[in-house]
Amino acid sequence: MKNLKIWKKLLLTFMIIIIMFCATVVLAITGLRQNADKYSEFYNVGYQVTNRVMSMRRGLQMIVKDIAFTMIETDEAKNAEYLADMEKELNLMNENATWLHSNFNGDAALLKEFETNIANAIAVQEEILELAKTDMPAAEIKLLDEYQPLVERAVNSLINISAVVESEAESDYLSTVSMQRQLIFEELGIAGGALIITIILSIYLTRAITRPIRQLEKAAGQIVEGDFDIEVTYQSKDELGSLANAFKNMTSILEEVIADASRLLQEMSDGNFDVRTQAEARYVGKLQGLLLAIRKLNRDLSSTMGQINTSADQVASGSGQVSSGAQALAQGATEQAAAVEELAATIAGISQQVKDTAENARSARNQTSMAGDVVEECNRQMHDMMAAMEEITRTSDEIGKIIKTIEDISFQTNILALNAAVEAARAGEAGKGFAVVAEEVRSLANKSSVASNDTAALIEGSLEAVARGKDLAGATAESLSKVVEEVRVAAATVDKIADAAEEQAGAVEQVTVGVDQISDVVQTNSATSEESAAASAELSHQAEILKDLVARFRLRAEYANVSVNTGSFAASSVPEPMEVMDIDLGKY
Image (tube, rainbow, N blue to C red; front, side, top):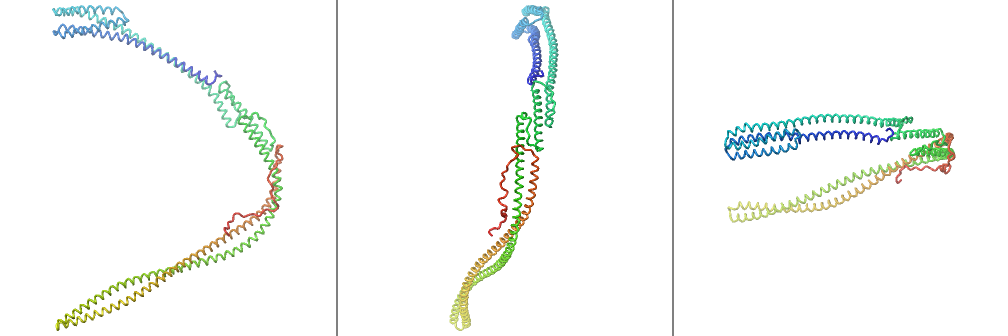
C-alpha cells in the first residue's frame, strides 16, 4: 500500500469506511424492519383480537340488558327499540366471530365453544321473549336458570381467547425485546469495529502523509536558510516520493550551480576575467538567467577595465594639455581683473551722480506738491467768496423788496395825510390841530419815500459792484483751476523724473553688482585655473596609478585592447574665454 498513489490510498480508506458504515446502516434497517413487522403483526392480530373480544363482551352485556328491559317494559315502541339494539349487537357479534375465524391463531376449540354457547343463548333468548308475553315469572326463571349461565360460559370463552392473545402478545414482546438487544449488540460491534478500523486507517494514512511532509518541510527550511545539506530518506512511488526525489535533484543542482557561480565570481573578484563555467548543463530553466547574468557581468567588467586602461592613457596625455590651458587662463584672468577694477571705479562715479539726480528730483517733487496744495486752497477760498457774493446778491434782492414795501407804505401814508388835511380844512377851527398832525405825517412820509429811493439807488450800485466782483471772482477761479491743473501736470512730470532717476539709480546699482560678480568670477577663474593646473598634475599621477591597478586584472583577449572614443581633450592649448551667464543687467 506504500507505493500506491495518495488519491488511491485516500479512496481505499474512505471505501472501507463507507462499507462499514453501509453494513451498520443495513443491519439497523433490517432490525427496524423486523421490529416493524412484529409491531404490525401485534396491531393487526393481537390488538384487533383483544379489541373485538372486548366489543363482543360489551355486546353480550348490552343484549342481556335489552332482554331485561324488554321483559319489564310495557311500551311497544321502546320494546321495538330494545329488540333493534339486540339485533344490531347480534349482527356485530357475528361479524366479529367471523373475523376471529379468519385471524385468530389460538385454540379453535375456544372459538367453537363460544359459538355453541351463543347459539344456545340465542335460542333460549327467543323462548324467553315469547314466554314473557304470557308468563313473566316463568320467563324470569328461564332467564336466570338457562340464559344467564349460557351467556357467562360465552363470556368465559371470550376471556380465554383474550388470555391466549395476551400470552402470544407477551411472547412476541419478549422476542422483540430480545431481538432489539441482539441488534443493538450487533450494531455496536460493527460500529466499534468500523471505528477501530477507521482509527487505524486514519493513523496509518496520517503517518504515511505527514512523515514525508515533515522531512520535506525540514528540507525546505534548510534550503531557505541556505543549507543544502539536506536528508530526505522517504522513498515511494506515490506523489510524496516523487516530490522527495525532486527535492533531492533540486538541492543537487542548486549546490552545483551555487558552487560554480561562487567559483566564477571568486575568480573575477581576484582579477581573473578569463574564466569559464564548469557546469553549464546544470544551468536549466530560470538558472540560465543566472549564468547569462554572470557572463554579461564578466563581459561588462572586462570591457570596462579595457576602457579604463585606454582612458588612463588618454587622461595622462590630456592632463598636460589641461595644465597648459589652465596657466594661460590664469594669465588672462589677471588681465581681466585689472580691467574690471577700472570699470567698477567709473560705474561708481556714475552711480553717485545718478543718486544726486534722484535726490533733487525727489525734492522738486515735494515742493511741487506743496505748491499744488496752496493753489488748491486759494481756489477753494475763491469758490467760498463767490458763494458769499451770491448770498449778498440774494440778500440785496430781499432788501429791495423791503424798500419797495416801505415806498408803498410812504405813498399810502402821504395819501392818508392828504385826506386828513382835507378833512381838517372842512372841520375849520376844530380841525386845525389835526391838520398840523396830518402835515407832519405827510412830511415824514415824503422823507421816508426819499430815504427809500436813496437806499434803493445804493443797493442797485452794490448789486452792480457785486456782479462785477462775481465775474472777476469767476475768472480768477477759472485761472486758479488752470493753475491747479498745470501744477498737477508739473507734479506728475516731476514724479516721472524722480521715478526715472530712481530706476536709473537701481539700474546702476545692478550694473555695479554685475561688475562685482564679474570681478568675483574673474578672480574665481584665476584661482580655478591655478587649481586646474595642480589638479592636472595630480590627474596625471592618478592615471599612472590607475594603469597599475588595471594591470592586475587578466582580461580576455577580445577585451585586452579596447579603444575609447572620447574625442580630443582640447581643441587648442589655449582655452576659450569663460562666458558669464548668471548676471542680469537689464537694459543697461
